[in-house]
Amino acid sequence: MAERGAIPAVVLASASRPRAALLTGAGIAFTTDPPAVDEAAVKASIRGEGGSAAAAAEALAALKAQQVSRRHPGALVIGADQMLECGAAWFDKPTDPAQARRHLKALRGQAHDLISAVAVVRDGTVLWHHVERATLTMRPFSEAFLDDYLARAGESARRSVGVYEMEGLGIQLFSRIDGDYFAILGLPLLPILDFLRGHGVIQE
Image (cartoon, rainbow, N blue to C red; front, side):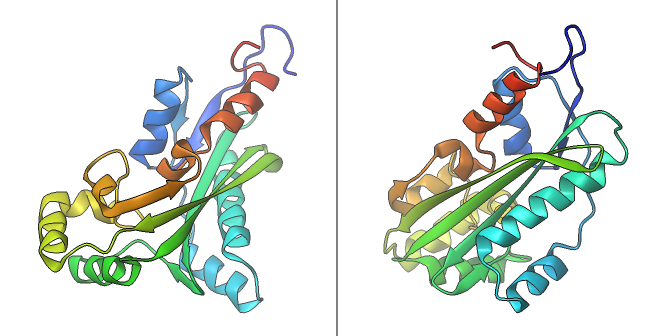
């Protein structure tokens, strides 16, 4: 527990608007400070060593928070990462519309796992970490739907690893969703709130 009257600052080490919106909606006072991590290199290293997608997400969440924590002494820094795994394949955020289309065609009619990891760091030390896994099944949508979806979703869909924003038009892609909604949006919110209660940020 934090000392009485000493409420630690909270920093979100992410530029993600959905993550910030979740914390804001839950009434958490925080600032944002996005990290600059070479995610591709970290993923390649972990995969080369036989590591799992969950291990990659957890490592990246911690690394992001540790990097930002150097700029915020004493603060509780929240780092997060998501990995999308479909069979043996790991998916990254698409870099252009053509890649977005390829991703959705590969996921169409398939179940995939969305792994969301979060870590809280203070002064470089990981105090807590958590991983959630959700399984999402895309329906076998038509080419006409795919064309319309990509045109209507635009750049916003390419900000997510699965080319969908669940809170918007992306929900039309799915026939079944199993898992925590907040984790799918990018932040396992209920476990984070429990952690923050235990550190005096919000009331018990």
